[in-house]
Amino acid sequence: MKRGETKSIAELVRAMCREEGLETPLNEYRIMNAWGEVLGAAVQSYTKELRIYNQVLYVTLTSSVLRHELFMNRKSIVRRLNDYVKAQVITDIILR
Image 1: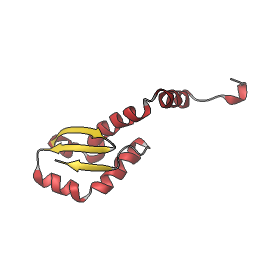
Image 2: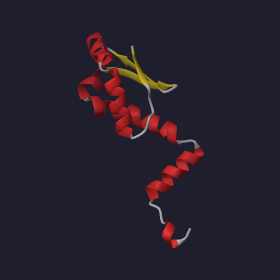
Image 3: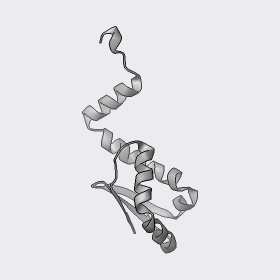
C-alpha cells in the first residue's frame, strides 16, 4: 500500500467482512439488537422472539394490541431499522 492510499481501520474491517461474506449476518445481528433501541423498552418487554429469514424480520409479541399498532406502522419501522444500521437488511416485518 502506498503512502497516499491510506485507509481507516473501519474501512478495512468492512472490506474484509464483505469479502468473507460476513456483512449480511453482521447486519442482521445489528438489526435484532437495534429492535429495543429503535422502538423502546416498552416494546422490547413485549417482544418474545426475533429472527430474520430471507430479508423478512419475524417478531413474536405477547400483546395483541401492540401487535396491531406495530402492524399499522411496519413500513416506518422497516425504514427506521435499516437507517439505524445504514444498510438495506430487511424488506418487511411479520408480526405474530
